[in-house]
Length: 277
Image 1 (cartoon, rainbow, N blue to C red):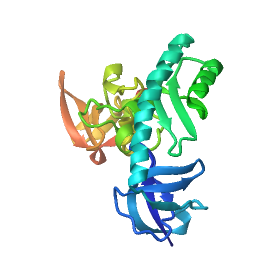
Image 2: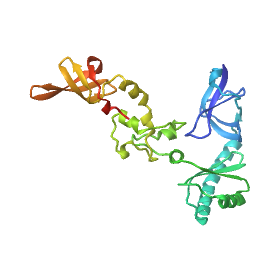
Image 3: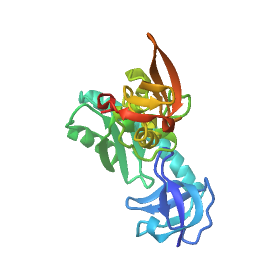
Image 4: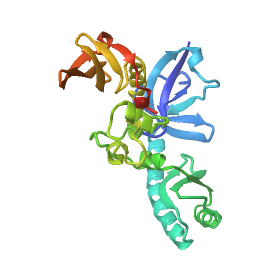
């Protein structure tokens, strides 16, 4: 077991484990941490806690100190400089007529490097832009091309559910999301219903995917012929989470529909054509 703290460098970001170096740290404390890129300003997202060795990636970097008034002031100044650099970079992009969209600017805490995040449809020759920015700021300049999901994550916003976007609040990594997940959950395939603010499939489709996948293995497909207490019939609809099937059963010259628990019906012929691809 080893004592660690969890820290975040940005609100919508990962929690990283650090060695508290003997400091007793509380949630929301501001600290200066030692990183591969030098000293960084960060916030405590998990107070001191003992963690099993197998869950820790060695070597652990250390928290240098609690942020003092000077550190906090420098961080605030960096934020102001980021806004200024954003406007200047926009002007330079227009000057060079580059087909790119600037998304965000990030100053490293010690101001030894400035990162400019942008989106573009293809590769961009931004060498002249870098020269212009380096001449203005006299420090290292790095331009990073990001995807539409990362763009929305950095900009922020609310989803159709009315809550803050998952990628801006707690998601630390983007997982693969497929149209199959929407089909398994019997969600309308209307793009406006299953797409997030970024225009890609909503991340939340992934949350219940494993549960649906497991339950669907135990359920007959729509169109399957099953035996019920009322006779043979064809599965007309499935309520996956409840594990309930609606069966269409012949009754004289007509049909009637009835719901059954999936465990109470016996599959005679499973229609493979209705399986989700």
